[in-house]
Length: 466
Ligand SMILES: [Zn+2]
Image (cartoon, rainbow, N blue to C red; front, side):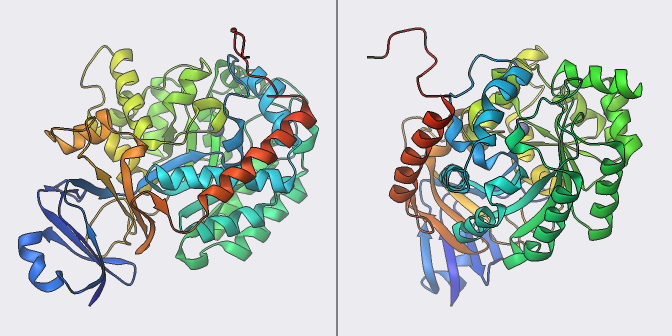
């Protein structure tokens, strides 16, 4: 007997040869993929011999998606900061809301995001930066309970600016270097490696909020502990202005000078960079997380993704947070990434469906240092996979599984989610969290936060809401 046998449908393996199997089957035991192939070959060993058999007929079976840029606590802030560029978006809306969150509100918001990630097919994600006021332990415990796999970065900082604006950060989010660094190390010791699903990373704040000494210490500590670092970089023009004026360096040269480059580093956005900087990212094997919806919504610009990929940079995909996207659906993000890049480059092949699918799977795994564990459906990898039902008007007829997943599907088509060999969603019912309870909790907690801060109380629309 094996634990799970996923039977039938198209299997997008994302293996080295990028094979897609018609009438494919996958067998799972002890959290690991032990067989992948045509059902006609595998049935004799596994059909009727699994504790759980998932009928994937009329489904696409594919690796679970890897979202490399998530702000968990922003889940309840959708539509709370519309029509603003990044810095006013942060200062006037997002930071005051986050800086006033109680632990209960932060947990309700994070749990909402976790639920959305599961329901839209993400199995591994990178959280950008928790801080003390959110109660990071409770949030990590909830990730563990949900069954998802995650790298969780904790913010590290010792200043309160954003780029050239001093004191920009909301007082409720300000921490000193000792506290933020000390708590990151505490979380690392407590959770790193827990259940084989949690990794604790360093999440230095954006330039303007961290001293050179502390950035250097972060690089040193991450290397010592063998863990990762993630940071926003060159998202808007003001970021370039800051490193040029303050250090006489372009953003990528600045992070290279600090030691914040390398295979364990995920730089987020990286919109405003030159050819030379792209070359440096490739040479240093530094990863980039591309978040096209967020960059579009905030009017930040369009990252040079096809140029970076061609130069050899590992570019992965992320959704960013509730008020900048406004969802955490990585299937939708693949679509946006492809069409924006193709329009920007006036080239229908600048990003093909298979390119963005790589960004959301194998490239995401590489960015998180998890290539040997996840990102593809191959024997020996951990069993992180999802099914997408194509017996649906949006996805019929099934002419091209890879194209349909990227250009036609969205997260609502995801039916089953398996992480580490455990079924965490079956037929769209999440088995690890009580969806009703999560929604009820977020409904009341969000109202409390909005009325206390006076932000997001009324919708920001130009028509009457009566
Ligand atoms: Zn972000």
